Length: 114
Length: 113
Image (cartoon, rainbow over all chains, first blue to last red; front, side, top):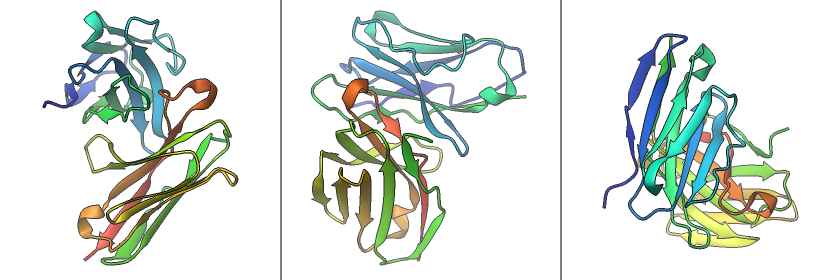
């Protein structure tokens, strides 16, 4: 079946602009994650959605970052007033909520803020 | 200090060599240990998963967990050029719950034909 789909695959934006990144998880996966991967920093947890529960936003680096998940499926990560330090690859992953389930990642959105 | 420490490499080995990749961690509550492989410009994919201490083997890959030392390893036997990728250790459990996964920085491996 289809894997996790992310769009756009690349995004170049000017400093100060807002951007929206989209994630389509695997059908039936109830858990959805956003991670950020920067050079030399590894994968940094941003936010986690599980079913209808309140999301775990503990990893969001500032109030310029927000995410929502509509209808328990598609998720959008929004970065307002982008800064150059926001340049990174933003990865989305989904998993089933049955015991310990592996994360299935998309190929990410490469964001460049100029 | 990061919760999970991993040498970023790069690590270059000749084809056929045995590769050893390692991570240390500080959170003794971690119970689930994973290795992900990431090819360039792709998302990470799960290679191996183990629970608590012990060994797990899958083909050319062996994962080891030593909770007493807070040390995990991934061994690749008969390495192939197609194994060239970045290998990320990951772990979860404890107060963070099993679904909040913490990753190492990743070790870049190059297998030279």
